[in-house]
Amino acid sequence: MGRITQAANMFRKLGVERKDVIAFVMPNLPETHWVIWGGEAAGIVFAINPLLEPPLILDLLSTANAKWLVTIGPTLGSDIWEKVATVAARVPSLEGILTVHPSKYVRGATGVFLTAWAKLRTPGRLAHLKVLDFNNECNKHDAEKLGFAPPSADSTASYFCTGGTTGVPKIAVRTHRTERANALH
Image (cartoon, rainbow, N blue to C red; front, side):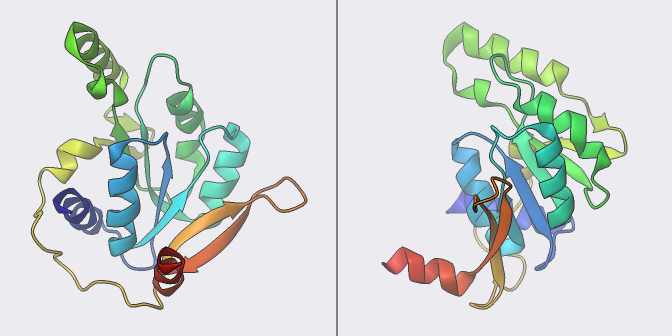
């Protein structure tokens, strides 16, 4: 709960307000959950499938008017960073990128090497966008309580892509009330 609270406070400090969108393109990591729950407390969270191709990622980020994007940094064996890096600077609403380095979960010397390798390849800026380390930024914020009023039941919590019959994702809007109802059933 503390890390979720830190993430929420971090997003607010980065300028995310209730109607702003935090998109993420990530595999399932602990940070993914902190982004979802902390991001929904601060604004609107938008999950984008990391298997999508760059043009579709660009369209989704632009359509949702994403303000911040959370993704993994350069990672051996994954092309997620490369996909995101090719499109992020072309999203007019985007202010910055927060990176997560999954190599930190690899133990021993291999983990140390992979983490160092990833951080050396993660730029501090990508065109006009700030590129910040998600965990370092979270560490700067209060883990005990939100620094702002929590969302109401009718506040938008998240956007989700639906497949539909066209094969092109469409964005579905979910409120906090809807998410609570789903969790209860």
